[in-house]
Image (cartoon, rainbow, N blue to C red; front, side, top):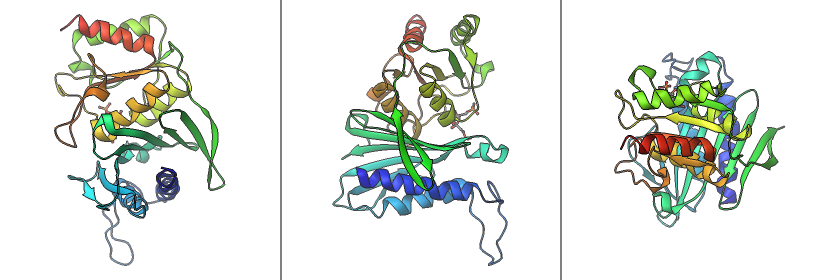
Length: 281
Ligand code: AFP
């Protein structure tokens, strides 16, 4: 597992360098050698693939940037699913983005998940790694990720990150979100799930929601690449992660790119989601 964490740290440093170059995002320009310049999220995908393919213990990888999983080592036993650069559209407007990893033993199924990790590329580069025992925060300092502290969620928070297109929200969902704001919760939504969930974790609580809605009944966020890794982290930090009626880690995607409605947060807020949604069943 240490080799995987080191490979993720090396990838993060290389992706940060890629983000910092002048020509970013959706350029299709040709460089001086006549090669087409790659988009940042595809560049990030290749960086991670390169670093993970050096580890014999990694059997299969799956990327949000690729249609199908890729077998690297038949003798390996780790299965790693990742979103190389979530929110890449935000780089152009200089907002924080992130990389997300879910680490499994033997198969891409929540019951086989043994660790998860994400990196935030913001004013600083931070990494959060969760295993069975801890949720640990690391800060990139002088080319090294230094351990900072273990993260825990309080029972209740103060911030709200409500995703999805409001005009398509179910009326009971809108009433619930309005209810939180009426009780003084602060709006903290950037459009990037990594910095938004990172803020809730570091501030000790609150609620991130991306519900099913009229335009996207199954939500927008992908179970394997986005939802399961954060669910693993939030549960180990003492919070909850549900789809409105059940733990998201009890779901089985039929296809690697399947999405799910999702709610992450401290217990008090997620319990309110469960009771509001139960009233609609
Ligand atoms: P992009 O990768 O297309 O920028 O989407 C980012 C994201 O996957 C996630 O990070 C956000 O929470 C969510 O989508 C934002 O979705 P909306 O734009 O519908 O609010």
